[in-house]
Amino acid sequence: MNQQSSTGLAGPNGAGEAACRHFVSYTGVGLPLRLVNPIEAAALSNRNTFIRAYFDGRDTLLGFDKLVYGEVELAHRYAYHPNGALRQAEIAMLDEEAVTLYFDESGALLPD
Image 1: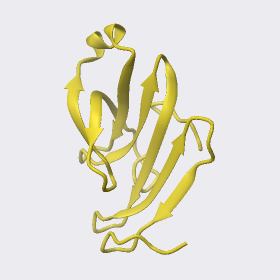
Image 2 (image 1 turned 90 degrees about the vertical axis):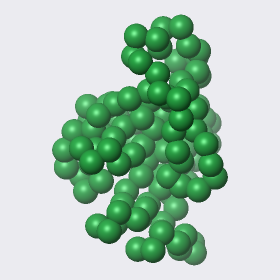
Image 3 (image 1 turned 60 degrees about the vertical axis):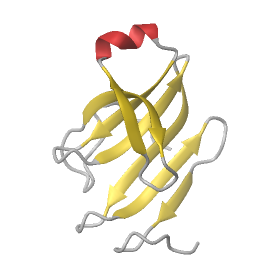
Image 4 (image 1 turned 135 degrees about the vertical axis):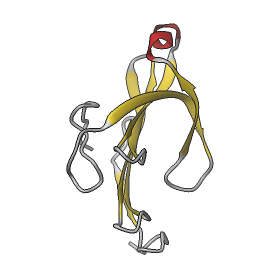
């Protein structure tokens, strides 16, 4: 999976800069995951684990990295259909191959 910095992560259609925010955790099982408990950047030095998330100008989640002791343990990258439904989710876990899932315009998972 491409590791991109917060300034290099493109918007859902490949354009624009992404805003970076931080969170304690995520919730739910559906994609995209819902991030919970925002953290101010100044508080990150006191945390061993946190999520660095990227959003476009419409506050749509483009992806996130879960950092544990400074190493990316889990990464998600999302792309969306023009109607806002999830089109693609790329998921990578530490020491594993990335998995890419594709969704139709209604948000239903497409078969492999």
